[in-house]
Image 1: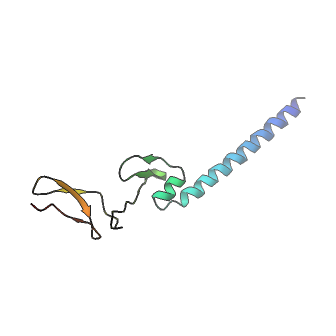
Image 2 (image 1 turned 90 degrees about the vertical axis):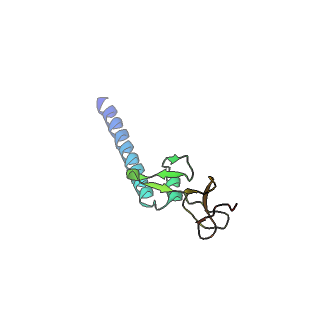
Length: 102
């Protein structure tokens, strides 16, 4: 009777180890395919809710979501203080700062 239970427990442990190893292998496969924000998010890594959003991939590497402006260009999300005291972001196809004219 003891041998039967030992065999069942050993078989269950072996199956558990095989399933867990497969899971780890699949996660490593997904992590090796991370090249940008979208692939990082698809792999299930945490997303930082900011603008633009960031996905924190393996080893802490951050992948930043690309954001297109109205003209279709992808610009960095920084701003500049204009002479009139207002702040403007980069705009246009060349991602230039355009301050309002008085």
